[in-house]
Image (tube, rainbow, N blue to C red; front, side):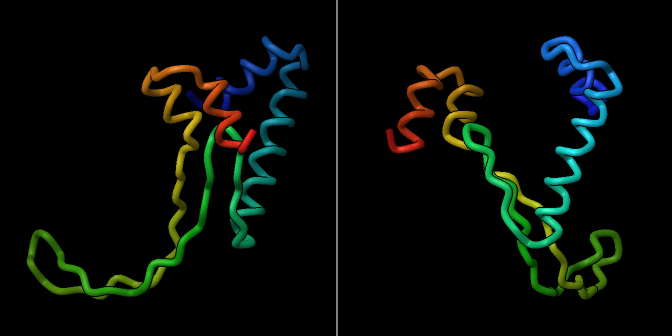
Length: 105
């Protein structure tokens, strides 16, 4: 699924114009990007968590030459799906019941 597909789905399901749908999608993605860039975690209930992690510098090896190289420290984005999403993807039981259990209801 592409960003254009998401815009199309919002257009069809919500009834916004295509321009409004595109602006909405862009704004949501901008909020998520800004939040991650500031180092905060993005938690979407029933979907999962996006977290920026810091990876330390380490020694690596060029697989073609075998030469040792230094891999610089960097930030990586990780996604951990919620129990609800995992259950839905695996077709196990009732995802709605899992959602209320996950929230502690």
